[in-house]
Length: 184
Image 1 (cartoon, one colour):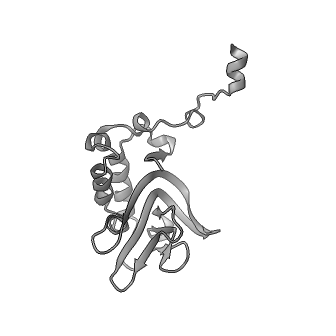
Image 2 (tube, helix red, strand yellow):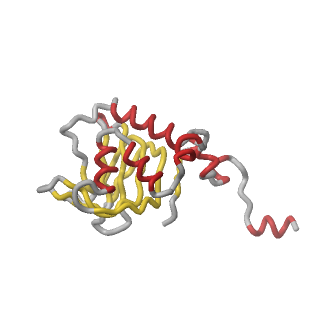
Image 3 (tube, helix red, strand yellow):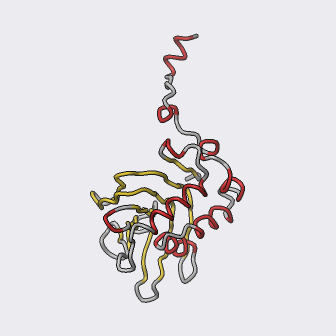
């Protein structure tokens, strides 16, 4: 899957750095607590999704893999491994219902990460561990080091310039092939 960022229209003029800084601040201030370790959509130590929220079901993230049981936690070595393809941010974590987590108030998704790894210090573990602690720097480092975005794009480019919203999200009327044919 190609790298893509989708977001709620209110974030169109934000940079990715601005959004992640805001999410991090709010996640850290939502009383995540060290006893809240999140969970997998399967209920065990692996699954297609891993999710965690702050206290009172506030700010949250969902880390996802496009592979069946693509994320796995090794409890003996305390290492997350597998394939991390996407991360969703928002608040109001629910589920897993029908095998998937959801967010009542979804804000932003990053797709096409294609991170993979096993063993200590792998990208998947470092990104998710960072997010669990409200730290988005490993995610930023990965996005920039893999040339998914340049540092300048990450820091200064508005999301709407990099990843324009579809016309239906911006209030611009969409046209169909029939409309175009009739206009000709």
